[in-house]
Length: 365
Image (cartoon, rainbow, N blue to C red):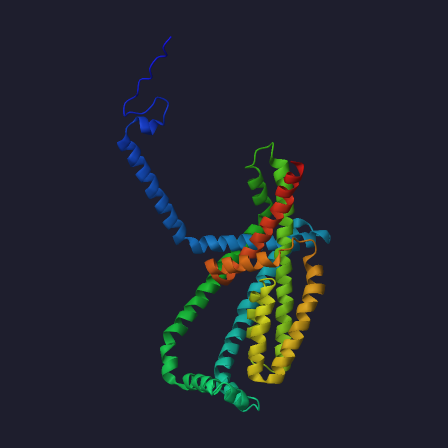
């Protein structure tokens, strides 16, 4: 018995195919073109809002990082609303301190460094080791020092930098505005942290919700412990750097300490970068100062690695050194220093997911 032949539908398409394709190739091409244009428009819109998206992303990171502090207040017999209010007041105090204390000191130290550089160069050239080093380099070291001193004293150079200085001022204003926006978002996310998590959990099907909540809570807890621990370690490093530079008489100690705080948020390589930079600056001031800074920073690195980090980080997930380097390079390539700071906690979260979810399931198969 012969089977019935299939009758092709209009447009040459088989019955049961997509409705758009059954309506004809012209309409299908039109819909696909609209879809492509919609995708391009969406991509351009997201690119135009990249600053806002990035600020929201960093505010979420900050909220997760402040959650361990909220839990710490709760463990000390504070209700959660009172703990959240206390953390918000701490954030406001930090903002006021930055605006009224830190920024004026940073600007003053920038001016001090700009005026002290010529004197530091002359002091460097008067050192006993400078002439032999200059002779060894065939005059290259002395030529570099003379060129820097000449350029700094030339009014034309400062005139040409006027637009750059103005642009720097605009960048500072934009940075303060973005920081204020991120601080408001962070306060909001901290206040609604539990409600936001519960709303996200409700999107998961009821059958998988308990397991998802269990994994998510452990990941977020370790994630927040990791972020808060890195901030504490960076603060210790910055304070030690400022004290050491002040004792050795290196100018711009507070400015260097502020920079060290942000750079040492990058684990493993942050402390190494600040140690190298501080040693070079101290050597320009005086060889003895450079040697003292190098020795004490090496001692601090050992104390940080074997004493501070185990106590501060606790049970937070540990990130291998190779992952730190790759994450820092990838993040800095995409978004600069903030990208490097964000990429490493993301890597820590991925490692935690692998340890908490993937590996246990592999053990069962």
